[in-house]
Structure formats: structure tokens, C-alpha cells
Image 1 (cartoon, rainbow, N blue to C red):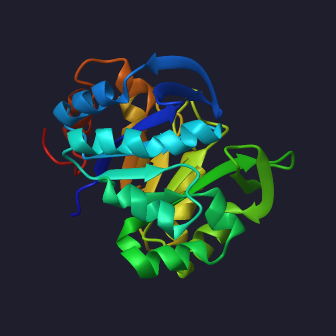
Image 2 (image 1 turned 180 degrees about the horizontal axis):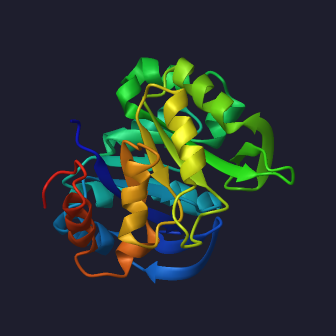
Image 3 (image 1 turned 45 degrees about the horizontal axis):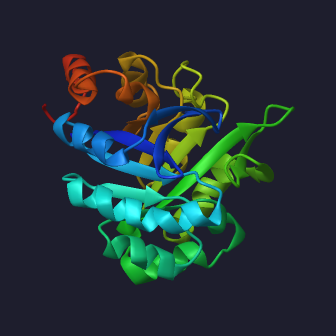
Length: 254
């Protein structure tokens, strides 16, 4: 049986680690993202995702330096995303140590972006992040621009579209669950997983280690990602892994 992955997520705003709650960032977790990277390297996570949520042009420009410093300390696969709009930006991030590129808003607005990245770097390098939100009628729609723009596109339709364009992996995050401590949107993620053939990562809402387990047991996710909770518990990755393995789930040993 293929091993599932535990992924730690660093949400970076203006060069610092912040907590995310429905895509707002009310709390500073740490001034130095390199410190968090050092911790997660020691705590048995399988991969690390770094997401840049900065909005100022200066902070976006400085993110390349942040990624370079993080990659120097990272000893597991490192995926990087946040405002990537062009192949040249992706190439710069890969050149300073990123292993995969995560795209979201630009992938929606420019149909050529994902195929272009897949051609240039290989599909295995291209992760499409899908932020989801329910409208007043309960429809699950794609949301872009860090939660500011709700599109008319259903999530399942978009997942199939980007798979067809060359995405190698999907990173699915429910805005309604983000930071709300009630676990993943399991029903949605299970349906996304069934709709595509590429790996699906779940993100948004983890509060208990059992929330991670449910991501595998109920939604059949290929990887479970968590941000806020991992930052507040010493050796958190090891605790999470031991819990998951103890439930008989196929994760790599600590």
C-alpha cells in the first residue's frame, strides 16, 4: 500500500509565520520562518509547504529570499506558492531550492499557465491549489485572490480541468473550515479525490490528530496538511505520526 504523507504548512506574511482563520491572519506565530523549518525537519513531517499570503509588492519581492533561506534548511520536499503568475517566477523559486510550485489565482485567470509550467518543469512539479467556499445556496465554488473573489466555477469541474491541463497534484483548502478547528471538509475532499486520478492533499481545519486520520480513512486523501496546530506542540509531527500509525494507517515511521 502506498504511504500517505504528513505535510506541514508555513503561512508566510511579510516574512513572518502567521496563523490563518478563514484566510484572515490575526495572529503572529513566529518572526523567523527558518526557526519553524528547523523544527519541522526534526519532527518527522514528510513534506513542507510554504505559502506566501503577503499583499504588498515589497513583501512579494522579498519572498524569493525567504524561500532561499528556508530551502537551505529543508531536508524534505519543499513546495512553494503565493502569487506565482509567470514561468520565470516559478523558475526563480526552483533555482533557490523549491521542489514544487503551487499556483492558484493565476492558474484560474490564465489557461496557459499550468500547461506551460508542466511543459517546462514536468507535471510532478506543478501543484494547483484550489480554495473552496460555499455560496448562499450551498454550492461549492472555486475562490481566488486569497478568498476575495468567489468564482462561478464548481470545485469538481475545476479539479478535472486543471488535471487535464497538466497539474500533477491538487492542494484543496476549504475557506469555511480554515482555522475553525472542526476538521477537513471531508465530503468535498472525498468527492474531489474520486473525480481525479492525480494525488490530492487536504488542508484547512485540523484541530485533533483524529482530523488527520479522517482525511485518510474517510476522504482517502493522499496527503494530509496542517498549519496552525503543528506550531504549538513540541515534536508535533512525531506525535501526529505516532497517532496515525497507531491507527493502522500507512504513514512512514517516525
